Amino acid sequence: MKIGAVRGMRDILPEETPLWQKLEAEIRAAFALYGYREIRTPLVEEAGLFARGVGQATDLVHKEMYVFPDKKGLTLALRPEATASVVRAYIEHGLYAKGGVAKLYYFGPMFRYEKPQKGRSRQFHQYGVEALGSLDPALDAEVIDLAGYLMERLGLPREGLFLRINSIGCKEDRARYREALRDFFTPRAEELCADCRRRLSENPLRILDCKRGGCQPAIRAAPKSTDFLCAECRAHFQEVLAHLDRLGTPYELDHTLVRGLDYYTRTVFELASRDLGAQDALLGGGRYDDLAELLGGPPTPGVGFAGGMERLVLVLRDRAELELAGKLDVYVIPIGEEQEVKRAAVWAASQLRRAGLAVDVEYLGRSVRKATQVASRVARHALFLGPDELAQGVAKLKDLSSGEERPLKLENLGAAFQQKVRARG
Ligand SMILES: [Zn+2]
Ligand SMILES: [Zn+2]
Image (tube, rainbow, N blue to C red; front, side):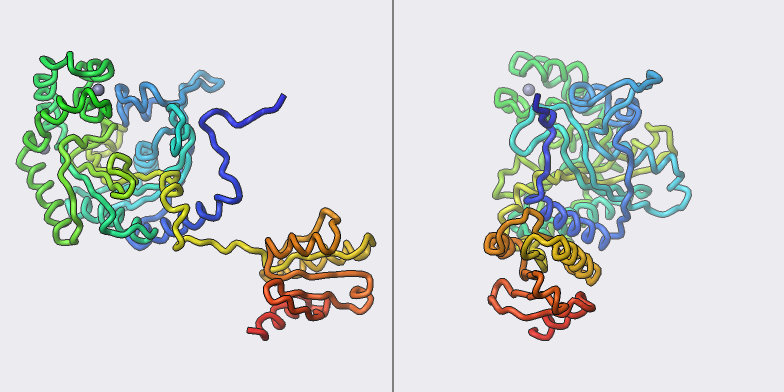
């Protein structure tokens, strides 16, 4: 019986990986310019990390997390997101003891048991940053600025980007806001979907996340979180917005934006592309000032964002700016059946690679004509090696775009190739 990939788990094939690599390189470069360094955390964590950090009642933990016992009965989870892991590592390794702001970035697969659909799989990939250790609203603005810069760098014009922002306040503000939402939605429970009626008792903030059409009129009329901010949180938010104004970053206040995870405090934001419709964000993030303490660490404010690689790949696949070359330098074609020739061909490829050239060899024994056609598709040069050439200590190099042919000495082959090709200019 044929075994296929698990539902919702997708192979990323060689046609696509050059784009992934290019995107990853650009993202790393952008993060480095803002002072971030990479952290790599395990894919597997104790399930309790996410129950405590992200929130037991969130869909992410409650419905979508892959949870399984290990052989000792410990309850483990495939990470559904990375912020909780990064903060766990930050606490575990005492990164706070170094003082200053810890600026960390990550890449990697996350796992959520969701309904697979276009652009959404159960194993998906995120990139993200976390800045830990400062309450300064300037840092919120810098993180948002990084998000915008990243998208510009990837070729999405600034005018096409759409920043939605809100503040949900500190723990105390949120408690008051939650009560206000409960008071508001309880008499309207009949208008809400079944999920939202459950959220009404568990966490009415989550109702604002609901995408169902029937719930929207009630959501639009609901109280705004910004009306429940304490003086400090209000000042913080005003200062974040003032920074954005100074940076020339347009934004839209969105009072329904609360983000799906429990750890968020104060600033929350999403960056979307106008072309794609604002409901599908490219990335999202915010502050999480209580998370470190919630995970047993010293109180440490933090702010960050995460975005999906699959989404970027969909958006950028057709953009000319990311046009990728990816051709081999040389395709080596042995002529005839002689093992001596074949061995020389393999040896020649090995020499050329050591000179820094990307090389492949004709391994299928196709006719010279056929193999040359293949070479034209995948490489810039073909190198022919037959018994006659071998006897003279040379190979025949063909430039596949001009058709020009020249002999190439086998002695010091790598250097000889570099010299010939460079000499031509
Ligand atoms: Zn507050
Ligand atoms: Zn609903």
